[in-house]
Amino acid sequence: MSERRTGKEKSWRLCRKKPQTLDDDSGEDEPRNGNENVTLELKAKLPKTADKSSTYDLVVIGGGSGGLAAAKEAVELGAKVAVLDFVTPSPQGTKWGLGGTCVNVGCIPKKLMHQAALLGEAVHEAVAYGWQLPDPNTVQNDWSALTNAVQSHVKSVNWVTRVELRNKKVEYLNALGYFKDANTVVGVGKNGEEKLLSAKNIIIAVGGRPRYPDIPGALEYGITSDDIFSLDRAPGKTLIVGAGYIGLECAGFLNGLGYDTTILVRSVVLRGFDQQMANIVAEEMEQRGVHFVYQAKPKAIEKQDDGRLLVHWVDRDGALHQDAYDTVLFAIGRRALTQELKPENVGLKLIPDTGKIDALNEQTNIPNIYAVGDVLHKKPELTPVAIHAGRLLARRLFGGSHEKMDYTNVATTVFSPLEYGCVGLSEEDAIALHGDDNIEVYHAYYKPTEFFVPQKNVKHCYVKVVALRKDDQKVIGMHFVGPHAGEVIQGFAAAIKCNLTFRALKSTVGIHPTTAEEFTRISITKRSGLDPTPQSCCS
Image (cartoon, rainbow, N blue to C red; front, side):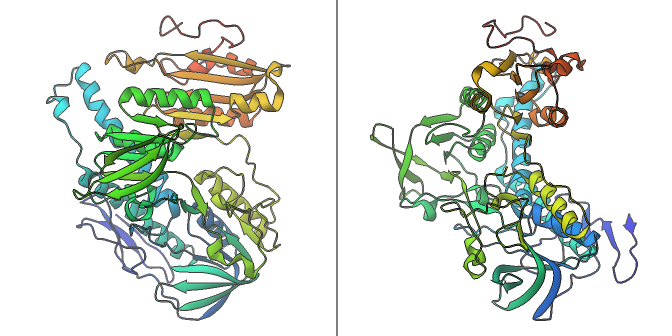
């Protein structure tokens, strides 16, 4: 299979070949692909940048989803664009290629690990459906094979991303960028060589990196989500510090892969999400064997003579506890990488403590400097948000567009073992904004058809719709815990963007038997006090 390209662009083709290794920061020219038989091979080498200074219409600092989306869109609109991207190794030495957090140490490897855990669960379910298999209790996951497969896919995406930038004529520099002035960015390469890039417009898209607690042993012995997807050994007994979505997702797939997993919860699970739904997710995970230690904070980590990590923590009463683990993973939040930009050189204002940028329509306090993605203050830290905002910003800068990013009613999903998808307001936020008397909460438990034969527990399968009580009852929040939550909530997110009402939702005919149809069947309000548990699959 081949594709011909004209002009100075060389052809590339898919060929049968042993996979190659590519370190995106190394300058090597061969990609690595997870398929042993099919590997993307480039005949042309990527161009090297020789000049010490250049002028552009747009310089993007950060090669993640938002920055790349803005850069590619700007080029399509005729702009001359450069992208700087540099990955500083984690404290454990982990680094990765072009593409940002999502591709390398976020959404993509996380979803693959989640899928691996679900497949292990499916092995046990298959027996109930008549599949003749070896004793499912003897089935084990090979951590090395899993991480190799995941990293092969990630590396192939890194490579394709570089090729796409070259083909679109976006100049890519593997360099750490910082501001010299409002129109000049300094790019520092891995060899220390500097290059000046002048630009009419600059976009900050540097994202963030995981935080570490200020306790003895954290940096020396702990890991984060930067490290777990390429960990060179099986994690074994694991302690996860932090109960946000990253902590829960990592705990979920580690437990599903067969590793003893504990979550240390400082305050509440899934802060910022609907707390009823968050507690349902936590209860379901506990049922699966994930251990939760509530109201606790780590104090120190020591490495024992046997190589294991002795963790000391304190509970809400001040009592000290300790236990030994093979791996300690911190998931206590992320810090924006804005201080590395030398913001003082341009007077860029940052939010104290977080280092984030409070921008209006992505424009910072410096008129020609913009920001997209996770560096923005009080905006959803989600890849699709960064991508969409980056594209719209480029269209406004170079295409004459006036369309602005709408950060409201953005759907998201927590890929816990039983997934949680939501869009709009939580019940708590709806009450705070509109008052308890002005909202109606519809809810229901349900029984997924695919759970019947293997007799899986349906106790935690639950849906909730938050609506205003007046007029046609405009829907302002939808929440779903169950299989394929991300796929379910996506369509309803579009409906909410179109001002969905509860009347319209109830007039929608569901697809049977699916879990998504449960939203169309919901009828019981919390206010009524009636039992929301169904008596049959069709009730």
